[in-house]
Amino acid sequence: MRIIPIDKTLKAFSAFDTDVTVVGCAPYGNGHINDTFLVTGDTKRFILQSINSNVFKKPEEVMHNISLVTSFLKSQTDDERRVLNLVNTKDGKPFYKDEDGRYWRLYDFVESSLSLDLPETTEDFYQSAIAFGEFQKLLNDFPVEKLYETIPDFHNTPDRYRKFKEAVEKDVCGRAASVQEEIKFVNDRADFYSVLFDNNKEGKLPLRVTHNDTKINNVMLDLETRTALCVIDLDTIMPGFSVNDFGDSIRFGASTAAEDEKDLSKVEMDINLFETYAKGFIKGCGGLLTKDEIMLMPEGAKMMTIECGMRFLTDYLEGDTYFKTKYADHNLDRCHTQFKLVADMESKWDAMKKIVETV
Ligand code: ADP
Ligand code: GN1
Ligand code: MG
Image 1 (cartoon, protein in one colour):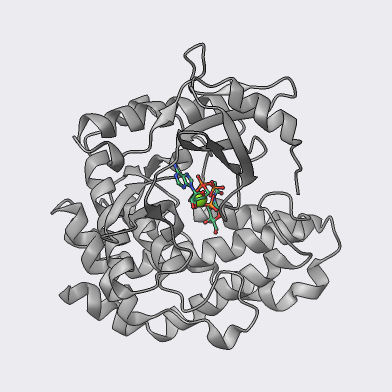
Image 2 (cartoon, helix red, strand yellow):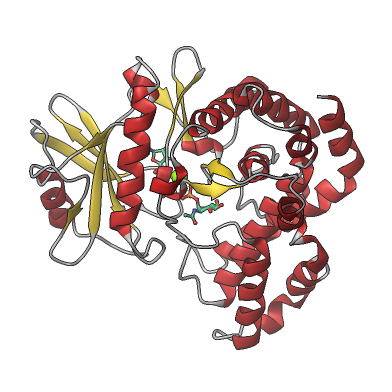
C-alpha cells in the first residue's frame, strides 16, 4: 500500500484554485486504483485524488481526456449536478504535479449523493443502468479522435490472456503451483476470449466511445430520490464495445456478494438483476444499440467477468503490483468470486440469451 504523507496531500490541495480553509482530510471510497481523499473545507467539500501512475503511464493524457469529456457533458445538460466538476489549479491546469512526481486532481464533492458497492434494491441497479446507458448515448456524439488511449488494450481479452500466460510462465513469486486449478479454469475457456473481436470483424459489434469501468460505485445516486445523478471515474473513457460496459456492470452489480467474498456459496449472478440491468441499459441508450449488440450482452457479461478474474489472478502471480490489496491473498479471493460468477453464468446461459432475445 502506498502511504502519502498528509503534508504532501495538503500541499497538493493548496495548489488548486479554491477559496476554502481546510478543516479535515481523510482517505475516502473503495476504488482499487487511485488514492482518493475527502477534503473538508469550511464552506465546501472536495474529492482530491492522486492518480496511480503505475496504472496510468501518462497522467497528462488522462486529464486531457477528462477535461474534454466533462466539458462536453456540461454542454449537453443544464443541471450542474449531472456532471463531475473538475477544479483547476491556480495556474489554470486540470492537474498538479508535486515535487515527487505525483499527479493530483481535484473534483467538487457530489453532495447529497451516495455511491453503492452493491445495489441495495433492484431499483438502485436499474437507475445505474439508465445512467451508464445515457452516458453511452451522450458519448456517441463525442469526437473520438480527440481521445488518448489511457491504457492500451484495456479490454483486449485475447491480449489479457497472453499476458496471463506470460505471468504463469515467469512465475516471479513462485505462486503458480498453488493455483493450478485456477490456471486451468482460464485455459479451459481459451476459445472464448476472441468472441467479441470476431463479431467486430464480422461487422456485428461497432467500436463506440465507452466508459470501460462501469461498477455501480462509479455512479452517484441522489440521496433523496435515489435516481442516478452522475457517472464518475472517467479515467478509462476510450473506444470500446457497448457490451463491455454492460458486462462490467453485471459482473460487479448483479453479483449476490462482494467482489472479495470468501464464502463462495454466497456468490451468484442474480438473473433478475441481469434482466433489470439489460432493460435499463437499453432504455438509457435510447435506440442506439443494434439488435446484434443486444444479443451479445451475455457474452459481454461473461467476457468482463472472466477477464477481470484473469486480471486478479495475473496480479496475484506477479506479486500484487496493480490492484490495491488489503491482505495477502486479496487478489486470489477476488479471482475466486469472478470464476464462480463465470461458472454460474454458464449454467444460466440459456436464460440469459432468452432475456436479451425478448427484452
Ligand atoms: P478509483 O479509480 O480508485 O476507483 P474513483 O474515482 O472511482 O477512484 O473514486 C473512488 C470513490 O470515491 C468512488 O467510488 C466514490 O465513492 C467516491 N467519489 C469519487 N469522486 C467523487 C465525487 N466527486 N463526489 C463524491 N464521491 C466521489
Ligand atoms: C478497477 O478503479 P476501480 O476500482 O473503479 C479497475 C477495473 C476493474 C475493477 C475491479 C483502471 O476499477 O478495470 O474492473 O478495479 N480499473 C482499472 O473491481 O484498472
Ligand atoms: Mg472507481
